[in-house]
Amino acid sequence: MANIALIGASGRVGSRVLKELSDRGHRVTGIARHPEKIAQLPNVTAAKGDVFDKDGLAALLRGHDAVASAVFFTASDPDLLIAAVRASGVRRYLVVGGAGSLEIAPGLRLIDSPDFPPAYKAEAAKGAEFLERLRGVADLDWTFLSPSALFEPGERTGVFRLGRDQLLTNAEGSRISMEDFAIAFVDELEKPAHVRQRFTVGY
Image: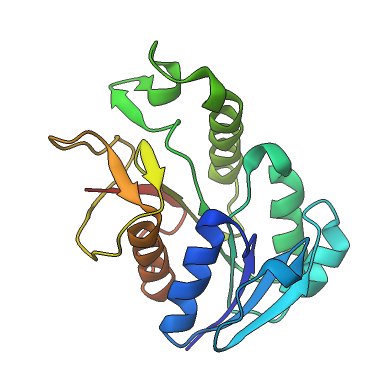
């Protein structure tokens, strides 16, 4: 059992990571701007936090075994989040990443493909920027987990594949449910296999 701080615990992905952590018996401090929206689950303590308040966030994170963040990239600042984790003294930092920075061919990222939906471009670009920031961080044991291209609520099957920097696809395209993503995310937290790396999960 670990003591985890989860930033963005009330969101679509964050709430599923929260449930996976709770179901596995971890103690979780769920952090959100509106803590009343955080699911009431065993071993979960809801806390009010602001991703733009570095000192306040660092105080909430202090004393945990690991920090996880599941926040929109366009609604946060990577430098500020990284600074808050550093200031908290917690070394392990896991980030719910995006698919846009994954390669679909050597040197060609998904976000740069002509068919990439314009509506998702800003979020994907900020996610890619966050990953580049993390790649320059040597004093945190960070991990950035990218989902597949289609990333929606669905079934918890426990059957999926892991990859590194290339988009995973199968006959049905490129997809992963948020529930199965949460399994891969918490697996990495429990048994780190991609420290200071990005990896991806898909069917």
